[in-house]
Amino acid sequence: MNIQYIHPADQLVMFMQRIYDKGLTTMSGGNLSIRDTQGNIWITPAGIDKGTLTRKDIICVRPDGSCEGPHKPSSELPFHESVYRMRPDLNAVLHAHPPALVAFSIVRKLPDLDLIPSVRHICEQMKIATYAVPGSEALGVEIGKVFSQGCDTALLENHGVCIGAPDMFTAFQRFETLNYTATLEVLASKLGKIHSLPENAYHMSETNAHTKLDDFIPRSHTSEELAARRDMIGGTLYLVGRSAADGELLHDTTSCAMCRRMIINSGITRVVNRIGDDGIEIIDVQNWIVNDESIQPKAEAE
Image (cartoon, rainbow, N blue to C red; front, side, top):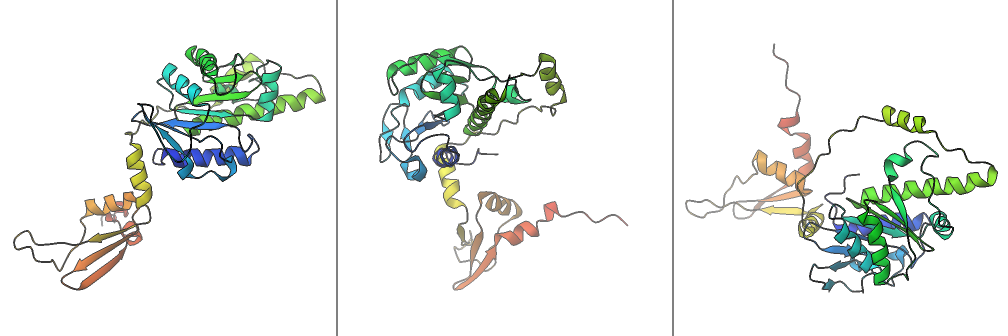
């Protein structure tokens, strides 16, 4: 999923809804955050039903500590900040209380990552964080210790799980995969002896995996730019042209090929051209896409 053009607030609502709908957290439990390119931390609020969360509920914590939004930020903000301080390479933090992983945290045991292929590729290293009171600075310290060792996942004793990642999609993928293998282990243990995959099977799965290509790193976008693009999608552009010579309204206003491409990429769906004093032309941008000469197949030479 390409989420680089989705505003952080919309991402948090989308992924929290997926977590809540899957029964992997309670209406008051769990919190998500995203650090944007300006250093702002967008985080879910405290005391709001996770099943009814909207983008207007999301809180923005500025680098100076000031908050913008209608609610208080999650009480777990201290450990989100701790993770970001320890790991500049991480820009998303996911915390939830899925029953299977909470069960493992209660018995102080890590899930087996070698039960099925690919899990270790996705989840990588994880460690247990010593118990501290939820919402306390001490919890942030304990979680920070785990992440400072290069781990991206901390299993919180008698609490839940905290996962860090470069983006929220990757964090959710790790979370879902880890919970899946933990659930399998709990179920399998009731049926009989658990058999993990041997080391050579793990290496075979690595060999047979799809070729990993170099990551494409797109230009980053500020939260304000993402918000503007979201508001622009499905919009209408009103276009008026005046003569540079005498300032009179033009009767043949149109958009050049480059401007059309920019309009298409912006998500605008309709352009209204003013033609002369009282004429208008309404253009469906979809027609520009269909009739784009730059993507039409060239006729074969005779």
